[in-house]
Length: 299
Image (cartoon, rainbow, N blue to C red; front, top):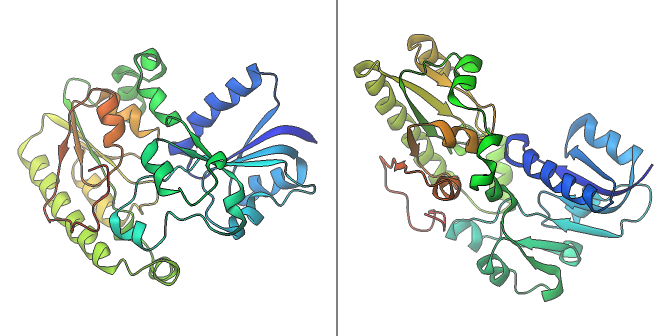
């Protein structure tokens, strides 16, 4: 079946709502659009069923990525890289995680600002498209009614609306990664073992702070928002069982929780951009100093 655009996403809670907005915009222009997951049965179904003119992807770093996203029956006219990861640490930049290689250089790459465009200045200028980040549109006042309100979330997640809602936005994906995946990162890019240790120790200390708070203050609802790639392990499950006002919630977008929470806590998350553009304050919890070469640019 012929279609103008196929839009692929990687992480649903991070990307899907933005792709829905993009889809609606393109449809208003008269184009036909399909949204698909990048993995599993949905990906295979899309590859087999549709023949797009343009493929829009969440990331595109090398020739292997091109092969993955362009495995349709016929040749793809254009491929556009939305680059959902555009904020890096000095070490990851130095070791090439943000580089674009091989025939991926021939695609079009969305740059959220001049910093990314300058970093990719080894590509043809015509391939670098300067744009804002779609997800930040949801921080605008015009989208206020888009979000669920406290009453709706209270019913959905059994949260006491009379209490203050306090959230911790976790970035502890490295703390729970498997050895196999860490070895893959090491062999492909660089050794992140020191960051894994900082992540694990920081996670342990911050969760200790949270449990101290839960013991001393019953007038809060504490929401632990795991990173989309973080494993919700037994450690967190035990705390949820012990403290009825501690909730591990990975549903809905992080912006939804930023919108309604009274107190926002962050460790390393680039969601600080959304917090800023939604005109909210946040605490940055750092029980351990993060080495300069591991710190993300935005912090």
